[in-house]
Amino acid sequence: MSADSDASTLAGPRGAAPVTSLTSSMESVLVDVLLATYNGSRYLAQQLDSILAQTHTSWRILVSDDGSSDETLAILRRYEARLGERLVLVPNPDAGRGVVRNFENLMQASLNDGLARWAVFADQDDVWLPEKMASQLREMARIEGGDAHAVPCLVHSDLTVVDEFLAVLSPSFARYQRMDPAGCSQLSLLSVNQVTGCTMMVNRALLAQALPLPAETIMHDWWCALISGSGRRSFIDQPLILYRQHGANQLGAKDRGLKTRLLRMLTDGRGVVQRVRMLGRATRLQAEALRQRLHLQGGDEGYVSEYLSWRSRPLWARLARYRHYYFGPELDRLSRCLLWF
Picture 1 (tube, rainbow, N blue to C red):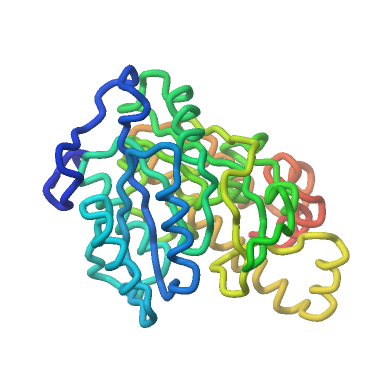
Picture 2 (cartoon, rainbow, N blue to C red):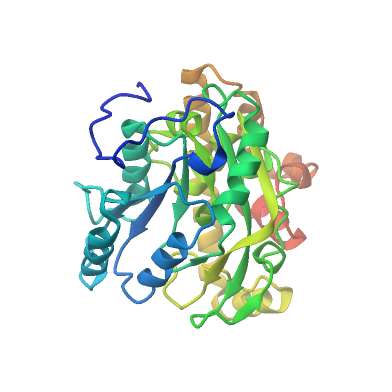
């Protein structure tokens, strides 16, 4: 699949051209903002306004809607009239298939179009801080190191967790969730995703290797994180987004404290066990899909094979090394070892 095929799929900004060198002025670098929407009228305008307020001003918003029945499309049309070719409504032939396929539609559109060298992912209900894109561009330029066309690269950041009115609940999503995004490895990402999709910036090399998303993809951001394992990934330990929690989030930030988790076990133990087992099956299938993708692309699949081989061993054998393969709080690690097969 050519990364430059079907470049007429989208109408880009008048006069825009592909960026061909990191020596180009960073102010002129075009970035595609991939915005997936679905019944998001309540917060959408505030998110769009925060994109308009970015200090990096060379961007284009690609929007794919998943079949909204509220005022989402009307809001988008208003901004389209205001922004012209800087906001592109991408046709979604498979509307109603959910967030993963909605983002896949955007990823494919950006890749096929070929105008932007980098893409950032946007949820409809967050608020971006003004330096978000500029900060990520600087880090992306650093880790690419001139290998942008060959090496899949991903930059992500921390977030500030806020309520629906933007009051701060936690200054750090990573610490709130007891995560270590800077320290996670390609091996630990096979079991636990520590890349928050709405903070991601990826290059075209990553889009090309990630697409099409396999049926086994759990979430689009997790799959992109796994693909970055064969390239470069960098975490900016600074919140660049206000991550809004409002009760209707696709995933959101949940309290992972021991007291809360024990309470969940006491009140919904059967449901908790069932969800853990389902995630175990899903992570195994996703890892198998990654191994197949890496094999087809000539990448290093050894660490994935090692992981899957260890997952297939009897419990007594897995107990000896589960901390090596499973990242996170001890309760999480042990439950995966006991319940994942």
